[in-house]
Length: 482
Image 1 (cartoon, rainbow, N blue to C red):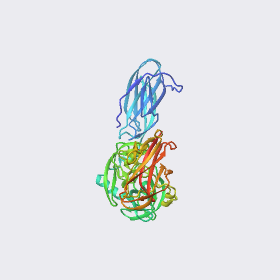
Image 2: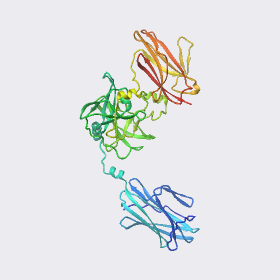
Image 3: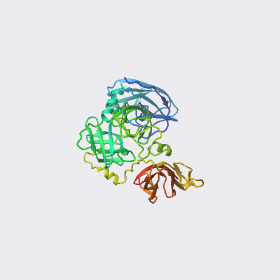
Image 4: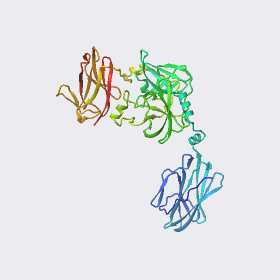
């Protein structure tokens, strides 16, 4: 039997709408049901008026009645009748009406055992029938689905994760490995992964637990800012992950498999500790090779996916220095909703097409010649070696200019070129130095700097690349405010 809450309050009300219904000495002016409300002076305000409620989703049903009748003391009763017509509880209230308008509100607590169907609460005032209110109680389909599931053990979750978490290896045009990321099947031939994980690649090698190594260069859809890409893997018929019905909420436990090289993974148990827009923040920090991996709820369903910052080339140190980057967090990992797979006939582009569209950022190449780089607002030229002043990663237009200051200590002789470039968040090149010839000689250190004005730039996040020959060897980001 449903458990009913007590009469919360009896109210003397004022003002009469035009839809009063006659019932002997007492006219039912109106009745309203909802799940949330509060007294406001002599009225009860229902915040979500409705007549349909769901067990497992709604905690209670509140019903308010307003009558017009003689002033004075009145005894009010409400008989709650379940779908079979049986009275399961009677609410009562004593009301002292100083005018001709008075009313009450009563509540029904929705337990898991409450009968499903159409309910009626019939009222009497001083023993006379005084109107009725009808509402429906339904089962929440989400809650019903969850109620039939069994929470998996950590060992079972690990086995599920091992079977469904994929390792993706990004290869360049020469077949050399650029890096690793993670993913999972969302369709028989569709793999969801991190956009950052496919950056600058020409081919993606997909390592699966049951179909061996697969390769693809087809991208069906993507979103660089949200850090996801959908790859088509031809000639596969994999079983997609089981998607969660209910989204993760703050406070929920969840799990993912942290990548440990190409084949090893360890299970990480974590908690949702915050949300920003459509994104969630997890308590645990995820490694870059784990980005794109599915996040499982306690039932082993894929409820979200690990995502990076959406700013290609930025790492954890950049996030900390910049602070408050859009869709990034200096604490924990970012989780995004799983993107539904596109239509089966959707056209795809190659990774080379994506590169030619200017969406990829060139990967950094290590060189022993480079020592350090910083940003500042000026140069101190006094002394034997220039020094960058006011070193920082956040600027305002009032600073006037930004100075890129780098130090080199060549390890061997090399004649090459050096280039400084400025890019916006969409990877558009905004400014650059002329290509400067550089004669590197072993252990002969030197510094270089580039000054550019901040006034022409809009507020936002910018990237600076320093290239030695054809390859960028150092990169940093800065934030500009008004």
